[in-house]
Amino acid sequence: MRYGRKSWFVAFTAFFLVFGAWCFAAPFDGPADEVQHAIRAAGVASLDPGQIFARPAVVPDAFGRPGMGAYQRVPVGMNAHATCFGFDPKRSAACAAGLHGGPVGEVSTSAGRYNPLYYLVVGPPLRWFPNWGGLVAARLISAAICAALVASAFVSLLRWSRYGLTAAALLTVATPMLAHLAGGVNPNSVEIAAGIAFFSAGIPLLLEPPDPVRKRGLVTLLGISSVLLLTLRSAGPAWFAFGLFALAVPMRRAWLREYWRVRRVRLWTAGVALAGVLSAAWIIGMRTGELVPPPPGLWHYRFGEAVAGYADSWWVYIQGMIGVAGWFDVTMWQPVYIVWAMLVGGLIFFGGVAGSWTLRWRYLVILLGGVALPGVLQVSQVNQTGFITAGRYMLPLLAGLPLLAAWILERRLLDAPLARTLTHTFVIFLLPVHLVLLIWAMVRWQRGLPNGTGAGHFNPFVGDWHPPTGSLPPLMIMAFGLLLTAAVFWVVPHDDTQAAGEVPTQRELRSDTWRESRLPGADVTRGSR
Image (tube, rainbow, N blue to C red; front, side):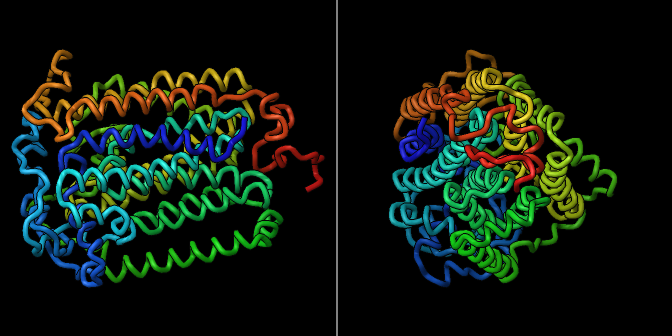
């Protein structure tokens, strides 16, 4: 099987269809914080330095509560928050005005301090056409960026994993939550996709011996994803630091010296370092971490109560990584989340059992960054922000766990038939969840979704609101996308004969990828490195 442009294009098309279905399904501000990001995008797209570097200010949120942000000069009709239905799941989106233009004026946005990189790309359609067509175009651009990153991750892992299991593990981290966010205007979607690409390039690049010629693509993908992680959101530098530390420590000095001789590595190292410096300057200069003191008495948690609240919220965070649409008010039936969590949790658990202490160290670093650090920040700021942590914020870093687990399992425990069985299990049980969440969200937006709704309520073709382009297109796009994704991943597992010359056989590696790994396809005797 060749792992080149054709494989990338097919994977890109599959993911773009899955992500793109959401672009046609959601009302304006149906996805989380879309109004805030759309206003910022339209302001940045003006290319006015005063808008790109908008002065930080205290601005009202959708409900009039003060917070940090900025003002952008955009069509005033963009200030169309979905407050009439956002936190009332019994109401449809018919009550909302939707996106429209109007005269250009000062409009507040809590995203006004965010780095402009993402908004420069998705903003022009919103600036030029502040209507449904411009919104869908901006969403499709965002979905295409995410699809390109995930497709690149797929080709990288398919090329370098032994039986293709690590490539198949992408199905566990490219969750319906990513698809939902990718189908809206929100930089968190690209951040998640960049985190997935970061680990997909970093694992075969840093955990296996150097191959400067054949791994040039991995260097490029790792560089691009690193720059995106560092740039898009203020939490990104932390995700990058913990992710890089987990993969690069420990690492053989000889490998580092060999990589440093490669010009591409030196250039990308300089580029990533520059991106880090510019990101730090933006965070400090734009005061992205500054908070506005809340009204007295709004929150009053003691330390122990805050710790208990954070610990007790982890099932909600896990749900948020898998898929909760809208304003966190569209949840699927609980068995859906349980099945997904069991498959991913089992993968991570058995990877830790089969791996060495080096792998468990990498697990620990990722957990410290993805669990402990958000907990410290949440508990320390709870009386200023309330409980605002969401699972989707942690996903860019925690996505590394199942990818690491799959990488080690197909090297130390599973053979080709078992890897194939596990991959087919992912396809059968995980892919349909994307369609389930889309239907749940469409029903919620079109006719409301009261608590205790029966199965007969989930008809996505009825209701008093429908997307201007109709309710059928997103369902058809999603169905075609899932069928193509299933076809791509169903044939991913390969045996040693198909992979000849690409990866070593199971019996050739007697220990973990750090201590006893071999250069794929090379005749290397033990100790010759």
